[in-house]
Image (cartoon, rainbow over all chains, first blue to last red; front, side):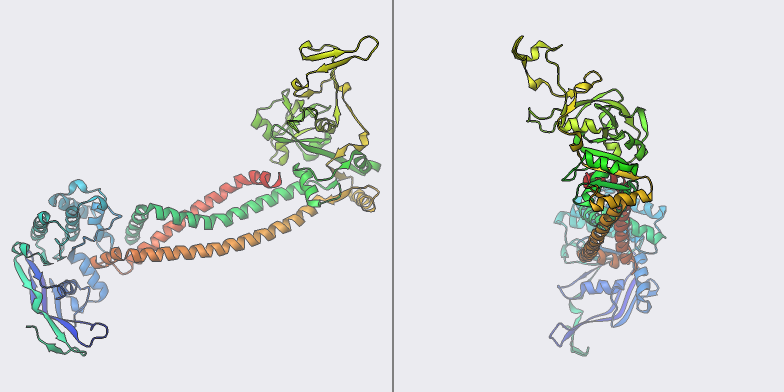
Length: 235
Length: 400
């Protein structure tokens, strides 16, 4: 479960400008097995929200809770460990490593930190490959995959650690229309099966019906002055 | 350990994926490691071989000129020195029996090796063992070095022909067919690559002596182009010279071989001089310096030492240059790796987003560098050891 409470994040003022912006999220909760789509115009803070939720950046104030863990009291190293073990990422540009084959990419999180690459992990990877319909591509180079196959691989990588939350940044942004819904549903179904919460940023309004809830972040951004005071409330 | 194992896996995968770049970096690092090792080993081995050969050759006599050329010629049978001494001067060195003098007449080749005309004592002086047969005893006989025999498949009683001195000079000296009376055992010295015969044999090959075929007796008439003269005139027989590709000295015709001019004037390229004792050596030096014996007499070891000083100087310069090149190469490789890290920014960011530990990315990159350095270093070391096998070839290349 993910819970964001009274979250505020200040963007630094652009070079030469005095005014800055603040992302404010009073409350956002995503329960296990639930999926939420975050929408809003470009630059409204959608990706920042994901980064805050993942503990990649820290807020000015407020709390980010993942399950029972408060990210705001954790140090950088602990946040990385938590991210590795409890959060899965799916990116618009897949972010797969070209020098690894499909299965090696899926198992990458186990080679980056404290997670054990044991037979159970390999078994989970095999099941996810079957589940996403790419088991026959297990040994194939990433460079020889279609976009749809790459995103399925990325979804497997996000879920292989059995995370409690999946953060997806435009997961269907690089896919052709025919593939978009199929891939998104594959992600949501697999996450639901693992009781993982999904927080996904998307521009595809046609796909919003696939999510349990939709959050429009278009009104979340506040204008601030040079010392961080809000000068213009969202309309 | 698990972290290292995973870092090694990822590093290996990355290097394997970029094979071309990895190979280039490996070659660059290999050369950085290999060249100094190779130069060091070759110079060391060359120095040892040269010194050993020179140490076993007390004094060398020859015409005035470069002592280095004289000594290298005498111990490696390379290109003969520009000037020669005469047999009379060799004999002058023998006066009072102060030393054993071994003349060396060379410059011609047989079966790819130098033909060395010398005294039969030469084999004993060098400690050369016969693998088969006996030492040469008369003109036309030869003893073949182990390497030549192995390369050419030569055995005792075979006949070998010297290489023509001037292939288009029909009026010049013809190649000589020699009988192999002995084959030397492998000695690991330049003697293995030479063929030894008497000085007379070497002079005949040079065209300074020859025999005559008795064309009025037992001659194949098909070789006769014409006969003139008769009972009261000297008989003149014109022969087809082109068919006589070589001459051969046999016990039957050896008496017909002779030298034109004075035997004392026959040229000798160099002579190895083994003084009976230190005093004899000093007397010989004095005679050479005062002109009583008009030859240049040098201590081979001292000449080689002077040569090696130059070699070491060149080695130092070479190693310094290589050191600078190595530093530049390592800096370039560092730049390549730094650039590759920048190119891999997306990959590295992905790993950080997923949650890799802060030390993992530097560990993976360090492992990649280690793999490159260790594999190149190992290859350079192995190749460095392999270079030792090239020492004889390099010796031949440099010293003739």
